Picture 1 (cartoon, helix red, strand yellow):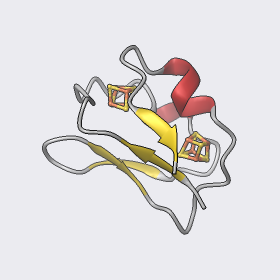
Picture 2: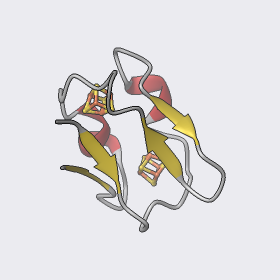
Picture 3: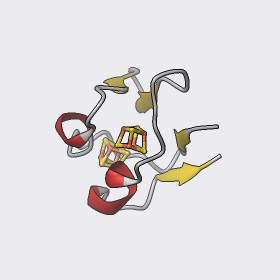
Picture 4: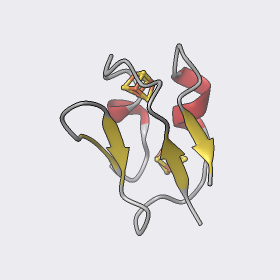
Length: 56
Ligand code: SF4
Ligand code: SF4
């Protein structure tokens, strides 16, 4: 399991540098999480201004 970034992502980039395992990258129209790398810490959900990351 991992967190996933919903379509509501506005690509602000705030979450990317906060991820402790560098699982987040800019996927083009929105940011994306590498499910194999994510450790479900929830930090991205805490910093996101629009609540886009959620636990899958
Ligand atoms: Fe990174 Fe944690 Fe978000 Fe997973 S839940 S993408 S490990 S910040
Ligand atoms: Fe998208 Fe939220 Fe990450 Fe900003 S913090 S890039 S809105 S998921």
